[in-house]
Length: 247
Ligand code: FPP
Image (tube, rainbow, N blue to C red; front, side, top):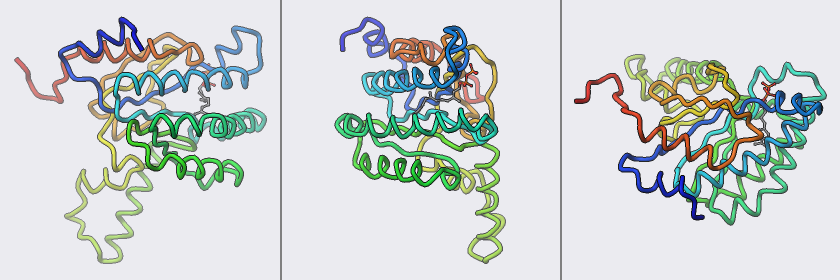
């Protein structure tokens, strides 16, 4: 795809982010602005997911982690939860062949045991079907909360210590990171949040320690691959210090 923005990303002297995380926000406001029920915003948000995936592939990003449904979202009205779960199944059905063809490996991260059996089956099918994808790792966080993820890691470690398989002195940062859902991935370099909100919202609290933050006022359903490339370009202009000094 020839696009000036993409060319700028490719020609920039600084490295691109290897891992981008995204808080996809603003579906409800997008729908309200058009006097439509909220699920219409989520439906439009599904097309933006495709844009983000294709934009990431074009820019050769290795890992894209999307926050699709939080543990707190289980408290939304049953009707909205139902619509979101239906959309998830629709996404899986519609996109599976293309994701396989594009070399995208999809993983769902979160407390998947809370999903209804039909959603769980669909999620498992997509993970299995895309298993050999090597171009982009697409992580879709559903029923996900960072505090719950860290609590789970602490519990797993406690169990190993209690069983005598581990000594308390071996509980270090690495041991914790290896028990998170994201164990096999590097930490996100860049976090994008749409809709202008300045919050982390219990997303990847451990993994985002040194991520660059990029907030755009664009509502998620309006997000395109070009918005992704703009964020990447902004990232490339930043000076990452990881707490150190660079001169
Ligand atoms: C936040 O907007 C978005 C969500 C809670 C759901 C995200 C879902 C999608 C983008 C579509 C489906 C995705 C996949 C991967 C199939 P909000 O409802 O909180 O918006 P608001 O803050 O404007 O009310």
